[in-house]
Amino acid sequence: MTHSAGASHQDWVERARALVPTLQERWPRADELRRVPEETIADFREAGFFRMLQPKHWGGFEVDPKTFFDVQMTIAKGCPSSAWVLGVIGVHAWQLALFEEAAQNDVWSEDSSTLISSSYAPTGKIEKVEGGYKVSGRWSFSSGCDHARWVFLGGFAPVPDGSPPDMRTFLLPRSDYRIDDNWHVVGLKATGSKDIAVEGAFVPEHRTHKLIDGFRCKSPGNRLNTSSLYRLPFGQIFVRSVSSTAIGIAEGALETFITAAAQRIAAGDQAKVAADPGVQQVSAEAAAVIDELKLVLYRNMDELSDFAARAEEPPLQRRVRFRFDSSNAADRACQLVSRLFNASGGRVLFLGNPLLRYWLDVNASRAHYANNPDKPARNFGGVQLKMKNVDFFI
Image (tube, rainbow, N blue to C red; front, side, top):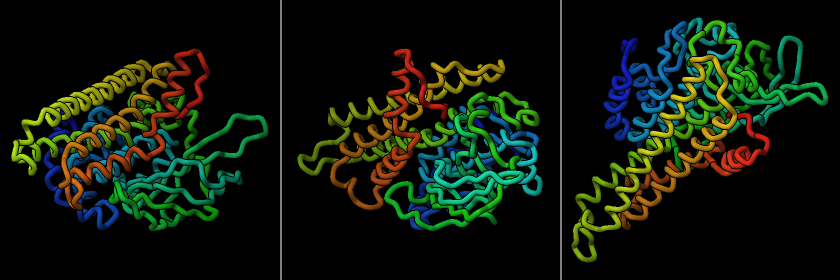
């Protein structure tokens, strides 16, 4: 692994930028494989990307989340699927730091480079048994699961009648689940987001993490991992791990669009496409939107980090706003890439055209539940209007 202790924000981003040409070359093969190639996973390990949010106690670097998301956005210009997998798996190292120390030992004591995939939707059956839980069922969309030896699965722990719901993340080793290879899709093809099937696996109590602890920014793992990084709200970090790729896709699409438009001659009248006022306008507006989306991301992470440094919970009003900002970023990136796509002429329809691939992938990213802005917008608006918050994944 490349020595990364003390690396600056720019060092990390430059490391990601250096990989972009290679990832662009691998993109078609990655789509054919329907998973990120092993060479790319090896490159990410060598660069230290999977350890960026991992605790120093386990050989990680505890970088500022802004830096991690900037790396993710940069990687997305080279291969959106690779950026998606980096985002979600990289954040899992951060979440494992919130678990009991015993769970961290289970995963990292023998190999601190071990990776974890996930599927958080509570679609399985959870039964309380002595010492823990019996877990069964099927979970979908476990991105990067082929490269992981453990998985996070969402579920509701049984509670007495009348008690509040107890949603948790359950941590299972590879021997306790089966991967169903059903990822045949039109966008983000290489994420390998396959189904996870579990048949009556036992999960000890210490391998669970309560959503409410992540919401309150007070998790069992804070006793071992004392950095303020691990006092950030779980929901805020997770949603950015799936929306930041969309911003990077938009930036890659704009660069591709500009390169093509600067060289094209219109078939109809032989005019330079770069002289077209519509092309000039969409280029300018796209650049402004990307800049805005990044600045909002940086501002939100800075504000959350300031609260964490003071050991304070961020106010509810800011959290619902930031949750909306994250989903809105994915939606606006999707709209932006569609504008570039529609301004690119008929050649964009050919398979292999990079702008077509960006368009398919950004639409796939928008399909993620966390990237749909409808409910976060209604909740944000409702809270502003003095109504009760209805979203605790914030």
